[in-house]
Image (tube, rainbow, N blue to C red; front, side):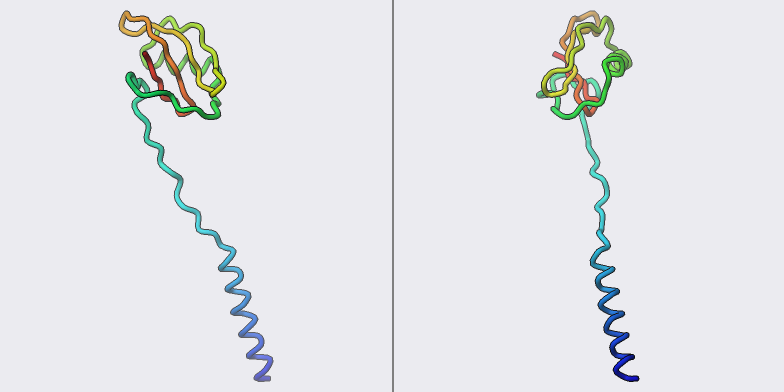
Length: 104
């Protein structure tokens, strides 16, 4: 009886430790801090898989004060690039996957 009880305790400990070892601790999601959506003067837009459609890219630019948005095309780095007007000035715009707008 003692052997059976000891064996049960040992197997219980082994089983519990195996279950504990399989429980992964997931770190909290990273907080990405970007510049303002109108990051004039930022070094460059960030390359990455861009899920914006052309219409969504245009809407985001217009929501941030750009007008006459034209020539929007996604480049090889998945960055939307085009031309627009802001405050009466013609600018080249870029929109990266994070939604950051870079104008120059």
